[in-house]
Length: 98
Image 1 (cartoon, rainbow, N blue to C red):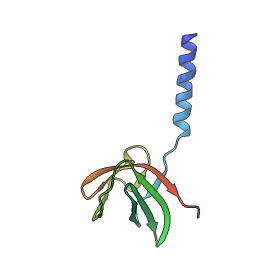
Image 2 (cartoon, rainbow, N blue to C red):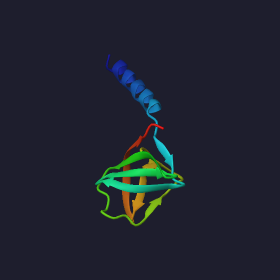
Image 3 (cartoon, one colour):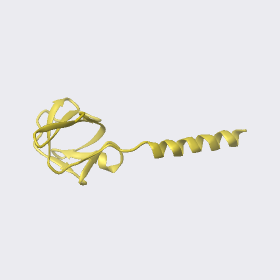
Image 4 (cartoon, rainbow, N blue to C red):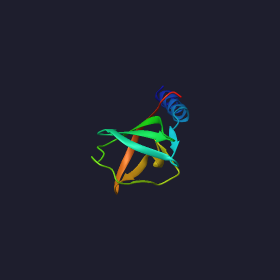
């Protein structure tokens, strides 16, 4: 009975891992505007496209962003970036309906 429960639970976890997908944005051409202590408005071509939330507080004024890949995501290694030399982690990306 216990082995069956473990097996069912393992299958459930594997299915969940396959269903959950990262939300990503290509970094090229993006600009950012701080709109809250942990939120950035994401702008491309003068159009607001998303709100990016971070795990921790962002600096009051931001001079420089550094991304480690060509995209920023809400999961995996691509969810980390530098703001003025400090590491930050994306927790959520919310897209505006277009």
